[in-house]
Length: 199
Image (cartoon, rainbow, N blue to C red; front, side):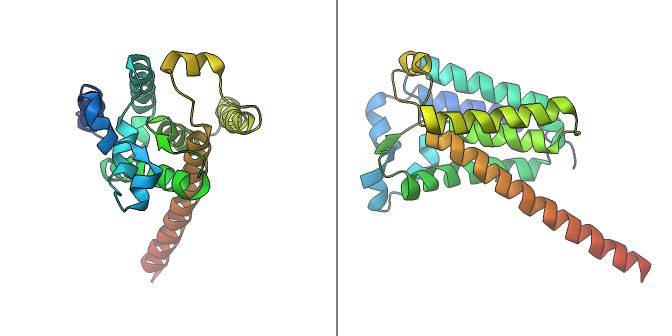
């Protein structure tokens, strides 16, 4: 894949969005957050905007630092267009999965589901090594552990909200799905190119 953003513009755009949403008056949050009943009324923009909202400063900082770490560690694995596609897809798809499969979640904000997806997709693209396989295994074990035993109480106290562990799980599942779909597409495309070259 081509290098993603030689000038890192996409990083600054996303961080600017995160910051802009964070400094909004909290009274506006009710029009942008994920809300089950509002989405049932077809306020579908919430599926996207909810990912940029945060419960407090610690929640905002944790997700912004996590995004920064993931972006600069793995950015060379992506093309500009695909990074935008993957990020946008995960925003909508994670929220959509919450809507269809986690009806107990009425309100949701935060980027953590998207971040889990970005991280594991990035690891799938890395050169295969024992460390890389270990990191992938740790992420899968983490989301499975959360599904069984719940989220860290310390994190919930810090962000003053219940951690949406389902979002983490959906992020990992969706990114894995996209990885195998794109891998298959690239393989077919390369085979077609070889066949054309031979002809």
